[in-house]
Image (cartoon, rainbow, N blue to C red; front, side, top):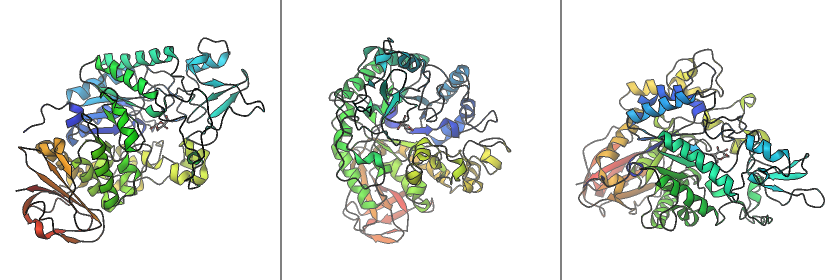
Length: 537
Ligand code: GLC
């Protein structure tokens, strides 16, 4: 049994790079494209097959690249178009696919389109953005809030109207009801697809269309009083039905090219998330599933989440799992360093395409950001909740070695964010030398996923492990080895009776890379924070 009938985005693993933080090659303390190219061998040796690069387009960097001022260019900070072409060629030469971040929902306030739109009410591009008259008292048109704090509306003195922004005021929302906007962004997508990129991760795809009646959003009765943005239910700015027409158009565009992938950033509960596959499987190939990130790290919560997600996938839909990204605290911090291996084992044995955030392969943790270093806009705007919403800690430079600046930048360079303190021990070079390191564990897991067809296409079921802290599941594919994964989310040892699954099994891999041989499933010893992948014999 093989998985040869599956697409590359089904059999492979996505590796996300935040380009500012991966590798600096020109001594400005900010990562760049030649830096990524230099590190492609590291990525290829992990065994992953896809690199997703967060935005590297021209941008004033108000939101570190998620405020685009030219959809078809390269930010000089990151290099040139020739550097990009080189990166793409070198990645493809190593069998790596390259996915770009598409940020279609908003532009930079300095994008020429917005400057035109803002210049005059009669400007032909006025309607490319979402403008609205003030209320009679001059206040914003409605109660919509910005995800990053404050109202979602900014008043433009010159033309006497408000424009809408779901994020910063430096990120005005495009009006996707305007056909010219759609056509123009679609042309930008073609520009990159014609170059040979392998797909897009679409930023905030769920927010591309807003209510055309501009209705107030209702109060959230369950608000916990922490983040003001959560005080409303976002029924008129997020996930409104017309957004699916856009997802379908984007997918249809991609279908004109062979073998490309469309991934959506979809922070939604399952019953809404699955709609982004499309009624005819004609929207996203992979609407991102963020449950591993958002839910508390404990065995029973995760078991319920995986059971529910797996059961909710419609026919023909391919699942996916994400452990971390540039917007969320790192898993080795959220779950704790002692759980970092369990987390990688979990990600790489679940049913669905895994996404790894750079650094997870060595167990990188959130960096400590001294107050004078804080740069993330929502953290600066809302200091009292910066520790919750601030995203600098998970964006610290990749830790390559124990030299000053961790090999990310030349010694003596001031890096854009400080390197995390633990870089002298937690780095690629040190882990390369240690056969039992997280890095080598990660590689071995990826290899196991390639060697065992059931880990990719096998059905999922979760037998009761008999211990609150333990989550066990099987992956079963006719004609292939059957696998049992047993994960201890807690700090206590257990002896488990899993004889209802089978009587004996052999250890394919253990989190410590320190256990092999046959085990009796009626009396399976599991150490604290240990995970096992077992081949049922
Ligand atoms: C997405 C990005 C995030 C960005 C936001 C606004 O959520 O992942 O980093 O700040 O969109 O573009």
